[in-house]
Image 1 (cartoon, rainbow, N blue to C red):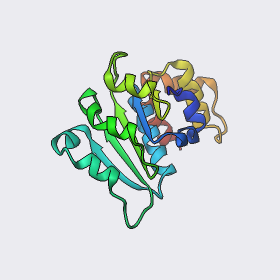
Image 2: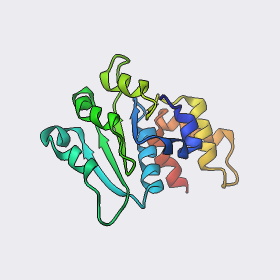
Image 3: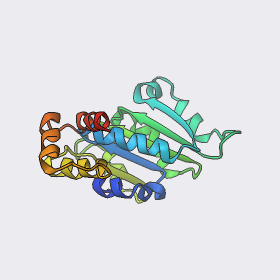
Length: 181
């Protein structure tokens, strides 16, 4: 199931219905923000972070973590970064037999439409797929207004200056906003 990133930014609980979620695209700042927000949202879950290479080197790692139930936490969230089609076969059995106590969050660079992992997850009603496309001036204006709404004296000229100085890069803009705060 494909979800729109701008809707998810406004309503993060939309992903509660999915145990396997893929974030892909060239907007690194947006993906980092989603990862940070998910870590805060699921702070009572046991959180594990891997990259694809770790899982490919150790064949049992992902299955062990998904099937293993912790004595301290009932729920687990697993973040896997740098995902590509190489890991698709390891994820197939998780799609077929979802575990209610585990959320699997995948982060990838831009994936082609014919990418196996992308097409399988998009067709599944049990999985969420969020494309993170590059920001434009309008989306960054909304983002900046939202982040600085509690500050007085912020006008469109200041917002335009921040956006132009960031080079339309959300990560750079986020750092500039944090300096202002």
